[in-house]
Image (cartoon, rainbow, N blue to C red):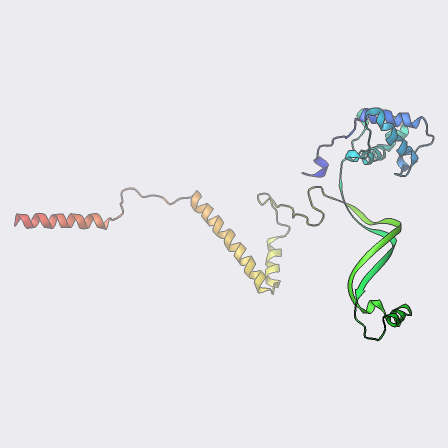
Amino acid sequence: MNEDKMPRTAPVNTEGLLKVIQFTLSSHNDISFDNLSPQNPFLDDVFTNMKLVGVKNVSENDIDDYVFTFMKDNASLLDSGNFNSEEYMIPQKKKFEWEGRDKYNAWKADFYYGTQEGYSEDYIRHLFDDYELLISDGTYVDEEVYDVENSQQLIDSIKEVPFNESVNEQDEPKVDLDTYEAPFTSEDFMNYVESEWDIEMLNLLMGIISKRKKFLEDVLAKAEPRTVVKGFKRFDESKTTKNLRLLQELLKNTL
């Protein structure tokens, strides 16, 4: 189903939401809904006041996102002070694909092991302490991350994708062959065949065309069956041979 034709349902009552917005406006000045951002303190107050219409947790069912989008999509009505619920548009829920990074500072340790020839354990430790020997020259075993600080999430890209398609593997749109119209002329097709040098591609085309031709011939044969000519019967050799044998037996008995 096309997303534009999907039924739109509101997670909260529109009249109740408008009353909350109107009530919250009484304690805020110079609010421009057209320029409203998710970081605006007015939005937090609206979320808090949603309890007045029975919504205790706006994070459930994406109500916070819905309320913000509702105000943005109907900004002109809200900015004009028109609170007639029948004129308001219900936002359509969408699906988005995103890519991002979780960026942070952290202490990290890499574990190695190895062997070293020498005479004294103490002196080998001394060589490692003075970086005459390097632990990283050993064989890598594992790693461990310790305290993390300055964590930061960065969204590199975000875009809307169709609801009925997966993010990683999208299904090809189905083609209705009953109403399909070729995006090329017969001359274009002949020019393509004449210019094609790939034998495997030509064999593929021939196979498809032969299959389609056979299908149409079968359809025509069923639609126009052969005419049956009355008065003629197929020769049945078995019956004729049996009759001849009976006739021979009769002749022997009469002689």
